[in-house]
Image 1: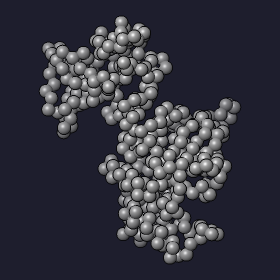
Image 2: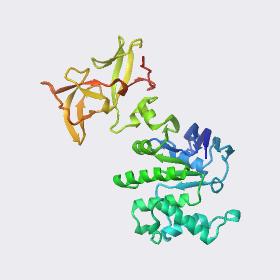
Image 3: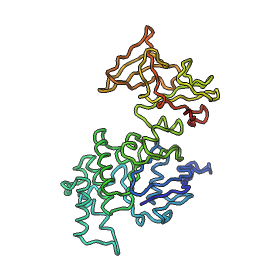
Image 4: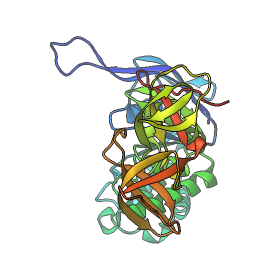
Amino acid sequence: MKIVLQNVTKAFPNRNKKIKEEVIAVDGLNFEIPDGKLVGLLGPSGCGKSTTLYMICGLQKPTKGKIFFGEKEVTHLEPEHRGVGLVFQNYALYPHLTVKQNILFPLQNLKGEQKMSKQEMLEKAVAAAKLVQIDELMDRKPSELSGGQQQRVAIARALVKEPRVLLLDEPLSNLDARLRLQTREEIRRIQRETGVTTVFVTHDQEEAMSISDIIVVMKEGVVQQIGKPQNVYDDPCNLFVAKFLGTPPINVFDGKIEDGMLKIGDEEIMALPGQQDRPVHVAIRPEGFIPCEDGAFSGILRNIEVMGRDCSVILENEKCQKETVRAIVDSGIDIKHDATGRVRFNIKKNKVFVFEAETELRINVEG
């Protein structure tokens, strides 16, 4: 099921009754979620991603704009008539019901032509449980399950009605690191097997990039960039997107373009012929550093963290916007510093991004 949002805006009354101006949670969203794809809504807390999800679901109505499922407008259609399955952050399972009863619950509330026999409902519940691999836990109560198992029950309950759209609101935030990795792989597998259009809300960019076909990066209710995860990572449109995607985070420096050269301090990083002289932000991915004794960029060595096949070289550079610079290099490389403790690197050009100092928009430096 294709989902289309046309100029969707959501405003809430200001909590301070003395202030008449509304709070804009989502501002003029325009994007399309293709049929059968898994789309990640990604952004920091308060950016409007959950509000967007709830408007798609129907739990909240847009202040302005339209929402379409396929060719049908559903802007004012009630949630129960939209054919959606919703999985909440806190699972929202009924504690007094067994796993089987929790999964059956949505089917037991069907009426009219949709009403099913007990046998039909049981067959669908078992099929949903097998899909998420909890069919051996059907007689347990939620309190007898691990966090990951509870999450699977919540997903099975959402899938049992065979929804046209599956909506997941930060479903992994309550799990430990290892379980998060396992569960997100399961979510991807389930989505591929069912082919259901899925919207996945998260503030964790690693989660979004690992399982999404498309990511929608949001900030303060406004879409910043939409695209395939790797494309957005490799080609960020502004400084916010560049800083938000990537682990470890991108290194950002106060730089300048001067006489056709990109400079960090007095060091010439790369040639930028034809560019006007001006101050800029220079962002370099951690994997963009190549140790070289006469390299263009340098920093004072502070530490080396060995992480198996890679090592993280921690440096100080006075133009960095953070306290330290982090460079990721192969652990087999011998990091050498001079008498002052300074280490030098060459920089991979495709890992350097330049942004306007004021607008923070990307500067095209190709060619």
